[in-house]
Image (cartoon, rainbow, N blue to C red):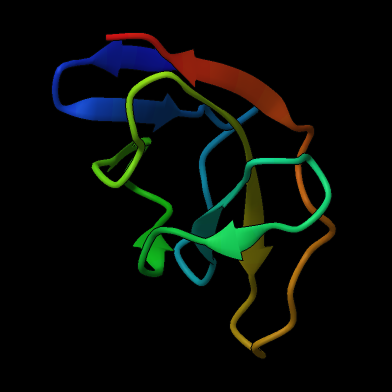
Length: 86
């Protein structure tokens, strides 16, 4: 993750060529229990999302979820913690 004056940028990479029929969302939590979607659906050709709604001095947990062409959601990715200190 990248922290800047513009928010927190969540980045990811694929273990191979991403499949075009999948999309993903970024989810965020403040307690690592209740996650909410903070991004629109993102095409797999994209590898970053900037969370502009992150507030100063707050700790956040982020994870990804993938949706296939049938509308089914994957299990969430591993969770990563980040604190926005400005």
